[in-house]
Amino acid sequence: MHLDLRRASVFLDFDGTISTADLGLHLLERLGADGWRDVEDEYVRGEIGSRACLSDQWEFLPKDRELLTRTAAEIPLDPGTSTLVHALRAAGSEVSIVSDGFGFYVDELCGHLGVPIITNGVDWETADLVFPSADRCCACSSCGTCKQAPIKDAARRGR
Image (cartoon, rainbow, N blue to C red; front, side, top):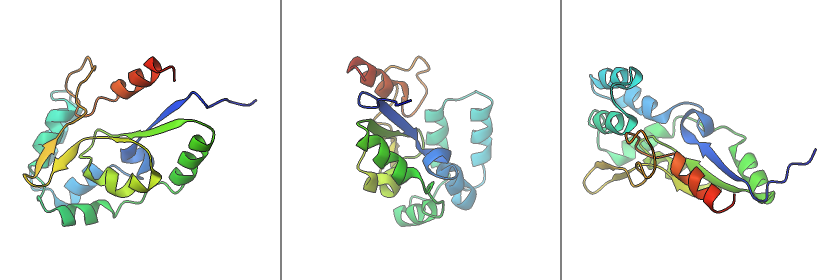
């Protein structure tokens, strides 16, 4: 059976999918000040959405770009990611990475793949967490990066 991927759009999650562990949790476990787990517990219980969780947890991390980037790089990427992305693109698929984590490390670690990356980010001049892809069409209106939006956009384009 041959699967025609020329009109497919493939969306890959980052934390725990492309990366072998959740980098946001890794940063918090290694560098986070006391109290970040209380915010995580609120999120797990469904009391807050991911955008509020990320914003609150960001406050527990040092705003040292070099330290955060170096610590994020401690977690390896799945070794098959590059092969998968190249094979999908060679078959005609559009490939994007969609992540609702802190985001800054996704560009650092996946920029070499040459695919669109849709995620949250950091304005390093102010050290603020930013949400350029928040809630465009999510019914939840609480996520940092709306993962439904790019999928719906692809469907509208006939993908």
